Length: 180
Image: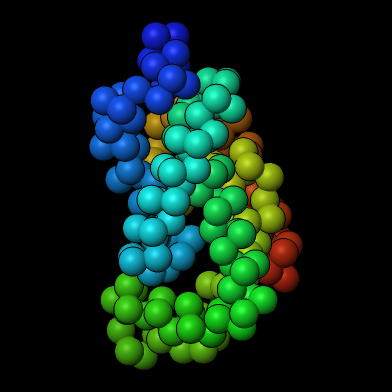
């Protein structure tokens, strides 16, 4: 983001926000779908993310890519929603809705698979921000190492090392043997 765009962003320029929403929403929606496993919930989460980003626009320091800041907001809003739902006992309903968005063969729709997805999402949420961002870029969005490095503004070697450590942490959290 250029210094002029940053100034306009902080001032709440509606045209710039429209452009940013158009540019960043598809990738943000992809991430939100990964988190929620429900397209309708993902759409709502993306909307909440943009509303929150607009309200907190003065807090964006342009230290990293705008998308990383938006992903952090999205993740935070999702985690707040999960905590609220768990207090209301609605997590079972969300797991049931997950099958509406995922078009998997009937044989693969097992309780164990849903439980594993939930455990994986929780383990991913516990990763440090950089590790989570690298995992999402490389494994969810299927970006190359070079594309991930460019998006996160880090060296390619950092992406490789971070992914290695993130996968090791995920295996550990999931009780899987370490293959290193």
